[in-house]
Image 1 (tube, rainbow, N blue to C red):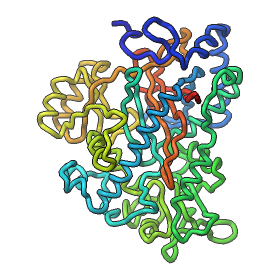
Image 2 (image 1 turned 90 degrees about the horizontal axis):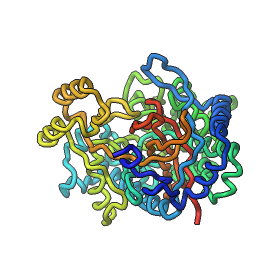
Image 3 (image 1 turned 90 degrees about the vertical axis):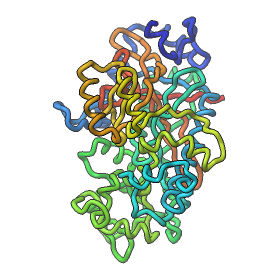
Image 4 (image 1 turned 180 degrees about the vertical axis):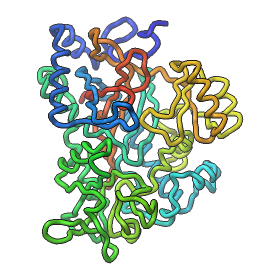
Length: 474
C-alpha cells in the first residue's frame, strides 16, 4: 500500500479528483507560478518574527525561542462537516462540565458504578479542596481545546479533551490574519467563516461567569507565569486583544477575602482571572508552598465567591488520559445520548490483561503517559526502533499505571508546501470552545501538521507546523 493510499486524503478522492470543498483551491494551486508558495512562506516567517510569535522548547540542546513553521496552504472543511463536529464538541463539553460538578459534589457517576472510584479519588488531578464548591453557573472548564483527528470521509476521533489551560488560539488568529494578507484573491473565491471575533467572545464568556456581586464593568485579568513560559506570547496577545491587564502573581494580592490588582493609583478589585498557570502554583497557602507564581490566599477568595478563576482548579481530572476511555460513558450518563464523536479505543496499562496485550503489540500501537503532553513521554510503535521499543517495554513493566495505549490511527492528510513542492502531510485539529452563559465554538480551529513525510507527530515541540483552517459557509 502506498503512502497516498494508506490514509484519507482530504483534498483528493481515490481517483485523484479534488473533493467539492477543495475544488477552487486545487484549481488555484495549478495556476500559481512554481516559486509562489516558497516566497509567501518567507513573507509569513518575516511577519511572525516581527510580531514575536514564538514558543520555547524546554530541555532541548538548542532550547530557546522558536518560530512555529507555518504552511501557506489552508485546510478546508465544508459547512456540513463542521456542523457535525460542532454538535459533537458541544455535547462533549457540556457532559464534561456536568461530570466535573458531579465528582466534586454527589459523585453519582461513581455511585452508579460507571467509573471506578479509585480512578477519580486517587487521581493526582483530583483536588479535594474543590469538593462541595460550585463555581458560577456551575461551569468548571470555560476554555477548552478539543483535539480531533480524521481517518475517513465521515469519521473523526477525539484524541484529547484539553480542559485545563489549552494553548494555541493565538496561532489560529494570527494564521488567519497572515493568510488574508498573503492571499486576498484566494479568500475572494471562498466564503470562509470568520474567527477574528474570538477575543470578544472570550471576554463575553469571562464576564458571564463573574461573581454575583460584581459590578457591570467587571475587571478581568490574564494571569501568566511570566515571560519565560513557552506560551507567554499567547498570554500577552489575548490580554491585549481583550483590552484587559496581563498580570503576574506579585501584581495581585488578597485583602478581606477579595483579590486586588496593584496599580499606579490605587488597588483595583479583580472579578475574573483567566489563569494560565497550573493548579499547584495558584496559591502557596493552599497548594505548593514554594510557589512564587501564584497569589497567597487567592483560593480562599475563590471559595468565598468573591472572584472567578477560569478554568477552575481541579478541571484536569476531566482530560486525564486515564479518564479519557470513560468519556463515552460520561456523555451517556449526563446527557442520555450516544456520543456524536468517536473515542479512540484505549488500553489501561494498570489492568493486567491490558498490559499483557500492550507488551505483546508495542510495534503496532501508541503508548502515552497518563499526564503527558506536547508529544513527550510517548512511543509510536510503527515508527520506533527496536531499541526504543525495548526501552519502553522496561518502563511499562516498572510503572504500568502511568501509561495508556491506543491503536495507531491513519491520520488524514492535507496538501502541504514542502521542499519538493506540494505533498500530503498528516494533520490534526484543535477547535477552541468557550463555555459560560452558553457554549461558543469558533468555526475551524488550529490545524497542526506533521511536516516530515510519514510522521504522525504534529506537536510544534516535535517539529510540527500549523495551518489556517477554513470552514466554508453555506
